[in-house]
Image 1 (tube, one colour):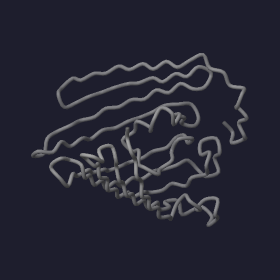
Image 2 (image 1 turned 135 degrees about the horizontal axis):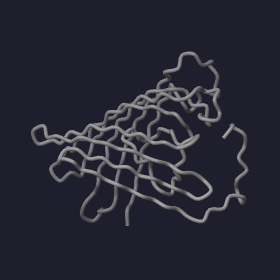
Image 3 (image 1 turned 30 degrees about the horizontal axis):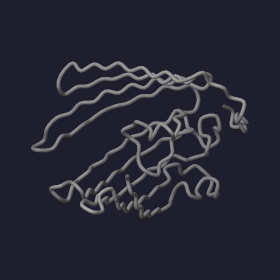
Image 4 (image 1 turned 90 degrees about the vertical axis):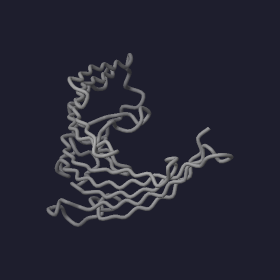
Length: 202
């Protein structure tokens, strides 16, 4: 946890994984959950979530807060899927960092009644540990803000299972104290990214 090469491949053994969850719903609009992820010999993470939902016309609006505690850097194997956070955004990278604070807004709108054509806009701010703190900021990622715009279309009929997605991402630097060096900027902040993705689900 000090930034040195881990060299764990072939040396780390685990007897298994245990996941526990407790939920409490005091009203129809309020939901609280606590999760515990335990991976033998690797890590233990406690994750709290509280959310409130209400109706605005035909739309449902949700506000929530989450807090995850894990000693050192946050770990969540990609084989388990994406991190279950409100503040998760495509092309952001907080796995491998600790003591991260984030705020996020997302809005999804469907352009057709069958809900095949989806448009999403999102904005987030991520306050990272110091880029000099390898224990909590493994990739020396400066604090940043991120803007996403995504259009996704799900085909029907003969092409059912085929998805077409266009994603635009901009990441901007929020830490003006860091030196202007490639290690802090290259493919990290002050960058644009455009992806065209075609998926086929069997």
